[in-house]
Image (tube, rainbow, N blue to C red):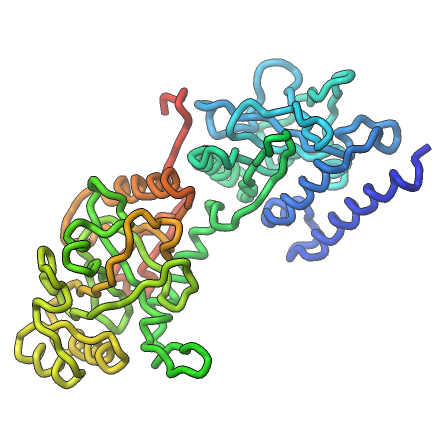
Length: 450
């Protein structure tokens, strides 16, 4: 007979699952909500890892109410990980905190639900746990209908950041077939063998849709100013609106590092996009977008000066000096109306003068906004928001391919994942950025021929 003390953990688990269901938009389907809410999924799995009971109600095996069932996906295996292998049963490992010796062999895998949760969500399965062991043989499921299989999440070993791309392949393949996004979870293990799962919203393939929507909103927004610090004057409106983009070629330095000429000239060249700034083209077919200057970041960007048009700054020793400096909005307007260039001060009046210049003098594609040069190799600290590729740039090339190189380079170098977006600076509806999961980097594993 189950004791009162053994009932407490089970009750806690049931309460947690109930809370998840109540919070769901579609309360009729806990399965759908769990697959959409990765943070809650990770919380439930970590609870089950720590539930080291000796038996489950009704004389059921341990995997019925405790632990986490996982199966590794071998490098090179097709992304359709739910397809059945040879034999009438599939072997899983049961992970629990009291079995630190159990370790999945691969860097990527997927999680099967415990039996009680699967039954509650109308996805029952039959299985048998090896006597005295931590292997569980699950009877074959219908792999032609993966939405009805008790799959709970995909995971990757956080010790190998590149494995995230293989987990993305699995996440995308499952969505393509079922229309549901499985969460991609971080799998970590301490030196003592204790396992935990974590969730990062920015590492989900579907997160790119949110990024594109956020950038498009900033592109169309034209506030008169942006809030300053408490007790201080408001900031110019480029602090919280518009898009600060930088294009660059694939070269001998990381894309997000200042180029050698930027180090020499004291500024890094960007192109600023907003619907009232009339900028139909960028220079390079690939690059990245920075978060607004109002966004808290470990390293805050500083705008040194503005050129409403191409400032021709390459090779200058003083990028905000050598073309001349306009110290007032009136001087800037007079200089540009006379067909000359000058570096405009980035205060509110200078910024508004640059808008007027862009609107009054047509025929200029891109602009140059000069950001103060930052230190090399601080990718983790920069307010990077996304990578982009475009087919409407001055220079032509393999923008999608090269943006994928940037994406993988940042992941390998700084363990940061950013989505790749498609930039169309002339989009009539203001939706200048679009997102597609198919544009993201692919890694099938070292053993794959795909």
